[in-house]
Image 1: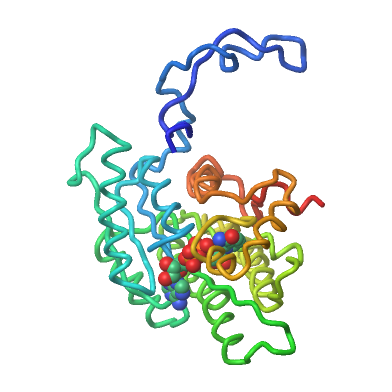
Image 2 (image 1 turned 60 degrees about the vertical axis):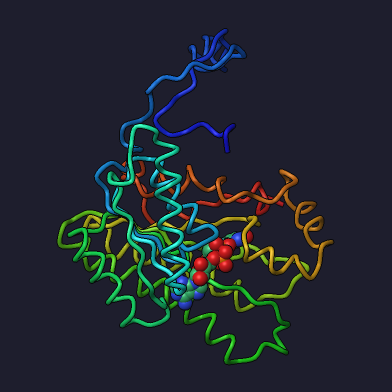
Length: 307
Ligand SMILES: NC(=O)c1ccc[n+]([C@@H]2O[C@H](COP(=O)([O-])OP(=O)(O)OC[C@H]3O[C@@H](n4cnc5c(N)ncnc54)[C@H](O)[C@@H]3O)[C@@H](O)[C@H]2O)c1
């Protein structure tokens, strides 16, 4: 983590490196020791934005919360099926945020945890009611809750398949709809649906047809909702990670260590992503820096989909 630049600080370096036009590419590129300077695009800040992330007790959702708290957000809702894990995550996120923002104390952050099964429409409505009662509004929502299971199509138990679609597809829809119900009357908001590179390619060698189809649905759901709500000030984009190091993939790899090498070999950058590799993308999509962007699928996959 320490090598990753923090938001709020730009690195100022010398000497200069020529850019394509032949002119010097300004003082931002060089080999000299970095100086810390508070120079960052103001619209990237999440200052005064209320954020909500589902599936946030661990994995990518947890890291999205971390990135938001690093980028100016101080009011945040951690929504997860596992309420006690969400509570622990909220406490840890505040501790980390105070370390990362050394001028702030736990009292400066209002991070709440809400237990919710996103596959239940009523539960999602109640969760949003709780968040709106607490903060009064919601500005950015990330639907990250999701599951994957690996069976061949011929063997996939239909009850498991229905559960997967209930969480990955209907859960994303219920989350987006409740977000929009709060955002549309205020004429602004950003919704990010976590899809996957599996929306665009077929993963090998593991078998996961319903998962791939669910993520293709999420990607096109984001595009469709983007058109439906574009003139109401609500943006909807999807974020499609490649193979990332989280519990979700570690569970698969626990049974098959060789698989990691196969995945890395299929990825042009030659590695799996860390959750932090998505921080810039999610902050950008949640912030006003992406204000003319809606219906886009942002892939962050080390180049996997290019081959
Ligand atoms: N890890 C990857 O390689 C990868 C790649 C592409 C896309 N994704 C997607 O990113 C999202 C997050 O994945 P992850 O790797 O962080 O997974 P993860 O298993 O580490 O975390 C998922 C979180 O979602 C929560 N959750 C599960 N079912 C829920 C439900 N019904 N209601 C509310 N919360 C629920 C879990 O409790 C957990 O905290 C998923 O949608 C996944 O499909 C992951």
